[in-house]
Every structure is written in structure tokens, then in C-alpha cells.
Length: 240
Image 1 (cartoon, rainbow, N blue to C red):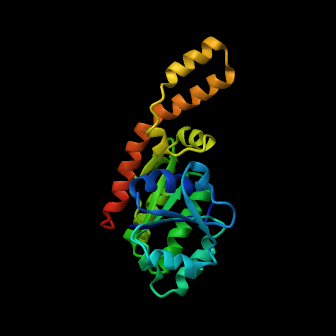
Image 2: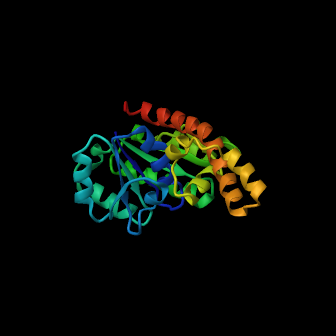
Image 3: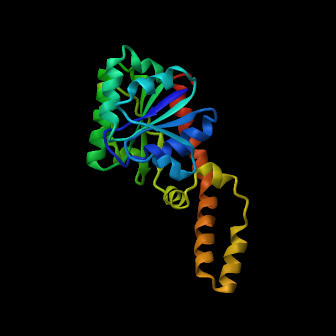
């Protein structure tokens, strides 16, 4: 499967979801960051190749030559990327799924809906344009009613309220440690024992690290189950 995570706005969780939602479930896929600045995915323990949106011919070649690819399209490059997509006849056919991560602030919701409109205008069918509701606290219906209504009335995209990633400190902790969820899940270190030892020795630095790692390992399993659920919902509509 070839998936593109896109949004006109920044700080929506595109890179976090590329690395933690899609990469673990697409083990053969390369992550290609379409970004001007340094690719953030590399800071999350993932191997990332980087291109700019203006290099669309190269991006298209990458898409056409592989069955599995994750495109993490940065906000600073989304317009160049979409221009390139429009210049290649049926260029969007090489992408199986466009995922629009969306957080609950008004500006971010507006940009997410605008992104869906732009993709639709390029001829991308609705089932290939899907929202993921990110950093949700009070429920999708409460925080994203306008996005749900937009998808229902316009018909340009799918907005399944079950495609939700809850607000969690986990991803910030993983980023701080330059880790991804796969690395956290495979960590069998006894951080409770390390925490006790750091307490006995009054090693504040070791105590803080053990506390953070304990929080990471204790939250990763349940979050990974939710990410698996979201992945299955997203891919069910495109037959991936």
C-alpha cells in the first residue's frame, strides 16, 4: 500500500502517525518525508528519506516503482506536492490512501477540510481521502462535529468517528527519547526495579529516566491496540 499523510496545516501529527501507526504495519515500506527542513521522523527512531515537494518527478518515480511507501508530506511542501500531483495525469492513482490527521483547534479543522476539498478537486475518490482524529480528549462528536458534518454533506472524504487517536503523553515521551512505539513494545527492561534502585541511591537523573521509561512501556500496548484498530478501519475501504 502507498499512503500519503497530508494536511495544509502543521503540527497535526503526520510524522508521529507515519512512524507509529503506519510503519509498524507496513514493514516493507520506506518513509519518504516531503519536507524542506530536516525530516522529523528520523528523530523518532525511524529510517527516513527526504525530498522536497518541488521534486515531484522523483516522488512519483518512488511511488510508481514500489508497492509499499509512506509519504509524510510536510505543511511547508504540501502545495508544491499538490501542484505536482495535478500536473501528472491521474497522478493520484499511484497513492492508495490519503490520510488527513486533524486536531481539534478551529484553524486546524478548517485546514483539514480544505485539504480534503483540494484532493477531491484533483480527482481523488472519497474512499481514498480519510480523516484521522488526533489528540482527542472529549470525543470526536464533541470536538469535530463540523468535520463529520462536512464529510457527510460534501461527500468528498470519509470521516469515521472511530478513527481516533486519543490525547496521550506517550508520543511526547517517545519523541523526547528519540524512540518509536515498536522500540517501546520490544523493551523488556524492568523499569520498576530501576526506579527502586534510583530511589535507594538518590540518583535523580536515573529516577527521572526510569519514571519516563516506565510510563512509555506501560502506555504503549494499549495505544498500539488502538492504532491497529485505526489502521484496519482506514485500510478496509481501499482493500489494502
